[in-house]
Length: 385
Image 1: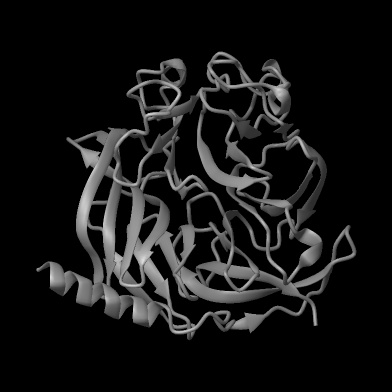
Image 2: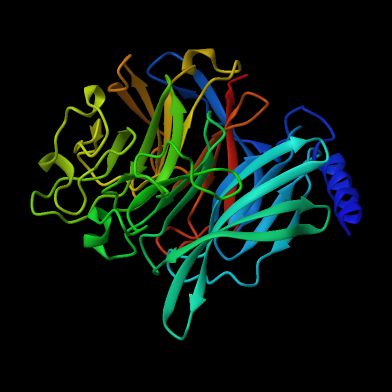
């Protein structure tokens, strides 16, 4: 059985990794965008007909895997063809719950693993979130292994998954609409978790024997590492008494408290860029004045758009845009540009591809956007001709 699984996985990788070249675009859109930094770019459609693509990952040599909120994993192969790789029938998709974050980890050319965070129904009315690890096979997932389970809800699930430079697994959890739980370090709600790739707890986590790496989060949906720092975006409460936005960009420090639900937005400390972790409370390094609904987060390090190197990009759902942030050496934003405002609707996942282009996905079928006949899109930003 183990040999059979290895054969299936090797066959899958041969299909997924045909070439390191860019996946061919379906269409290059005609508009040329002149940006604040004098960069000229265009946008290409890589895939149409997606259904709420929540996260995107790249296979070792050029394929793209997309998670859809309804429970499907889609594969866009290196030749540009899209097919359903697997369908997780256990996924409970309702409102904001469903199949969310994914991360890939390759041990060797014939051993490719995927980590998935998704919602399941519990009883008649309950929801639980699950972190699962599986081998990626030619016809779908093999050797599925549940690593962790915690309370979920139809809203505020977090469920972003990423593997850090330390080769540890990071997972965001929302407060599942139980705001007080975010300050309770014995609860997994409203946290950033850190685990080994086998699901066990690292000995150097800030709380001994606990997966909790930081706490006081409301609904974090984006993680990215840059400048030897970890950044996280999260949704603040809308309709606050001040009438201002309260969505946040945070620089994460081990053991740090990020305030929710006792404080949020401008109520918190703003010394985060210079502070330490270990239970100290930190405010955001950036607080958006208008609701943005920040989702995907990625540093750009490619060579196709060298003016953007080491800049941070944020997908904005409510803000219907892609945000470009320039950070100083302490990780504080010193400049911001709003790209593609309203042109593609709600933007969720953001990632740099191995081809050096910047990819992003739309989320217009999630019940909050303007539905397009072609479904949701996977797009990428390329230099203008």
